[in-house]
Length: 266
Image (tube, rainbow, N blue to C red; front, side, top):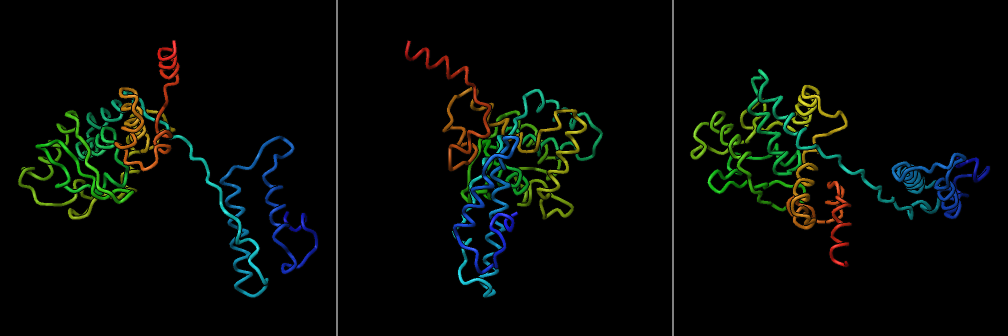
């Protein structure tokens, strides 16, 4: 398509403006009025950058005319939150099952639902990261690199204490190790294994198929926001550095905003 646009020219005859014009053309709507997504445009741009960088290094062209191309920031789709009923159904399905690992799995996904921790942060938890006296969890290995302390609500501490006692004995004297061991007791389960378990229990519980393991985190954020209406607090609880990221997790209540504006200015 690029060759048809610029005509019959050698590679070393291609100039920057021709690349600019072609990319601008691709941004235009097609005959049906549809435009290419940002992700698609980024893939096209990456192809140009890689090709011309290779041609420049190989001496085929004198200048890397595509080096100026910058990728756009694709807008992430909002995470669909679970409802409270779906969380209860999911956890209840695990609890009443005959699965030998049901207590482990219920504890694992309860932490996801009631702390808002990321998938990778939960599977990396160590036994000593949980303080049963203060009811706190220390997320020492986070995405941003900064440790965070999370409060543990009573409904979570009950099952967490039960799991540690059953799996590790007296939780006050237990030695360090992964909170959720994998096949080897000194190694935690992986994020991929957690994903597999989520799919397994999602299918058995009958909740919406579109939900992902990240929907627990969105449920946590939305539930917290519905009570507090404090986006900054929710952002801090999720460990976000940019409050705009937090907004993608929350099912915003526009009716509440309408009522507040009416109350303030009436």
